[in-house]
Length: 270
Image (tube, rainbow, N blue to C red; front, side):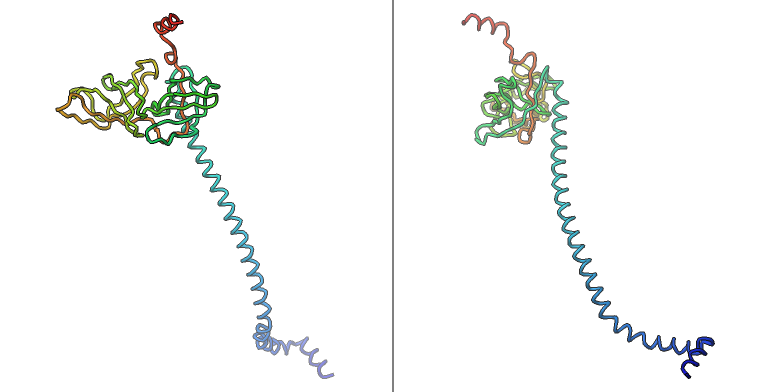
């Protein structure tokens, strides 16, 4: 009966409110200690779940990064190929009436020969003696043909020679392969000839094998020995003989066509 009266009095006059607040403050550490293991277990479970999720996401992002890097490399390769093809196509109007882009299939590993095989042959109207160029100059000529491929000898092959002239003054010469990938020899040039290091050699068009005016090489070194009548001259090809993946096969009105005396001689021999 007394407790009922006290509760009724507290409800009306709030006498026990301060006591209740004090007890709440005193009991808070006990409640915190009781709830601490439960909170720790819950936090640990959430942390493990979060770490597992982050680990899975990290592995997924790692795999996606590898795939994207691989695709980027492919795109870069395609971009480089497109750049090379654009350079070839930009140079094609100078070459003549018709051109054809071919790809390298293989390179002859014989150290005494400089030859490559391309993926175009007689089925594509390729002919023996056809000139082969890249975007920087003359590379060589076709020497053997099959239906689907052709062998090309490069201008640095020891058996190859090409008529050239100095672009600066028109002095004619012959550029002969040395067997070295990046060197040509220019023989029979007198010591007193007007030729300088850095001079550009272009195809002269003599012989009707190569179109005229195309870059062939630059003079790299000149040795003039008074004891001999001719200078020893080394030139470096302008074409990138060791880097090209695509080449340009050229048809021109003055290439692969017999002259009238040759036609008469051929007809007379029949």
